[in-house]
Image (cartoon, rainbow over the protein chains, first blue to last red):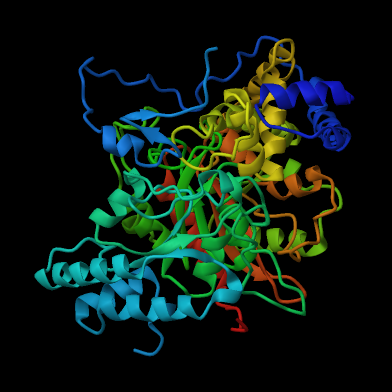
Length: 95
Length: 493
C-alpha cells in the first residue's frame, strides 16, 4: 500500500507530532516501505483464529475497591514543566 | 585480589563472604573503571554517592551473616527503569530532567537484596532500536574492536551490554521487547535472559509495548543470570500481568545434566543467505548439546516468517498508545510556545522536539494501524497471526520438546553508522530470531559460544517452555560449559 503525503499529514496530526510540509514526502515513503513489509500478513490464513488478548492464559486479579494511595500532590506535581497553585498549568483550552 | 571488576556475581558473593574483599572495594574498582570508560558512552548518569552508601550498608549486612546473594553486588541500571531521585530518561529528550518520585519494582527488589547501583546505562531511545544509535545521549560503543571501526553493542540495551562486557559493573538490568536483551548480549559476548512474560514486574519500567516488554538480567555467565533473575522476579500487585507463581532457586537448577532433554532445531530459522559462520555456530552448538546427552529433534514453527511483520504492527500500535502520555503537561520536556499557540500546538511541538526520528516513525505507524478503517486489517490481523505463532510453540512443546536452539543474531556486531542509510526494515531484521519469543511470551537466553572470522563474539539462543526458566538455564549452563567461551575484549578505551 502506498501512502500519500495527505495521509502522512493526517497520521502526524492524529499522533500529535508536528511535521513540516517539506518532510512529509520522505515520511510517506517510509510509511509505504514499512506497510509494504507488513502486507505479508495477508498471506496468512487466520480464519477462525481469535486475536490474542493475553499471551499467558491468566485471569486478571481482583482486589477490594478501596483507596490504597493518595495525598501525594507535591510528588505528583514535582516533575511538571509548569505547575501552579497545586495544579498542572497548560495553555488556555476553552475560549 | 587482582582485578575486582572482572568478578562474576557468584565470585564476588563468595569472596565477600570469605572476607577476601568487600562491596566497598569492588564498588570503588567499578567506579574507577567507569570514570575511565568515557569512550564507550555506556554509563550516562553516574551515582557514586548512592553506590558508596549502598556498598557500606551491604558490607554491614554481609558481616552480620544473613545477606542475600545479590548483597553488595555493583550493578548498572538501564535508563528505562525509574530510579527515585535519579534521572530516568529512557534515553529520550522527551524525559529531559525527569527524576521519578518512585522506584521501579525491579530496582526496589534488587536494592532490598543489597545490590549497589553504580549509575544509569545508555540505550536506544524509549527502547526502540537495535544498535543504540537512537539515544539522546549519543551512541553506546561496543568494547569489542577488530579494526578502526567503532562497533555497535546492539540495542536497545546497548549500554548494559557494553558495560558488562567491558567489566564496568558485575552485571546490569536490561529490557527486551523484541530482542533488546539477547541481541546486545550476543554482540558483546555476554549472557542475556528474557524471562517468561509476567515473570518480572513491569511496574516503574518506562513502557514501550506492554504485551511484549519484559525485564531481565545481563550478566557475565549463566550462573549469574540465574542468581540475578531470582532477585528480579516475583509477583507484584502493582503489575496486573505479573504472575502469582513461586520463585524457584534458579541457581540450584544448574546441574549441567541434560541427559535425555529434547532440543528442537527449527528448520524455519535456517534463513536464505545465512552467513556460513552462523550456520556453523548453530551446528556446533547442536553437536555440543547432543554430546552432553540431549536428544536432537528437527521441528517446524511454520509461522516464523510472519513474526517480524506482526511485531511491527503490534509493537508500534502499543507504543503509540503508551507514548500518548508524553504531552508536555505532567513531566519531561515542554516546547517553547509562540504567541497564540493553544494546547494542540503545545502537544505537537513538544512531541516533535522531544521524540527522535525512529520513535516518531513508530508512533505514527502505530497510529496508522490503529486508525479507523485499518484497525481490523492491520492490528487485529497481526494479533491473529500472533496467536498462530504462539500455537506453533505450544505444539512443539506438547510434542515433548524441552528447549529450542537457534542463532541469536543473523551476524556479528556491525559498525556504528553502517546502517544509517539503510531501509528501516534492514535494521528490524536484527531481531528475526528473537522476536518470536516475545510474541509467544516465552523465556529466551543468549549465550556466547564462538567468534566470527574476525574474532567478534557470536551467540546462540535457547528458548524454553513458559515458566521453566530453571530448566532453560540448566540447558544454557551445559551449552556454556561445552562452548568454553572465555574471550574478552582488549581494552582500547
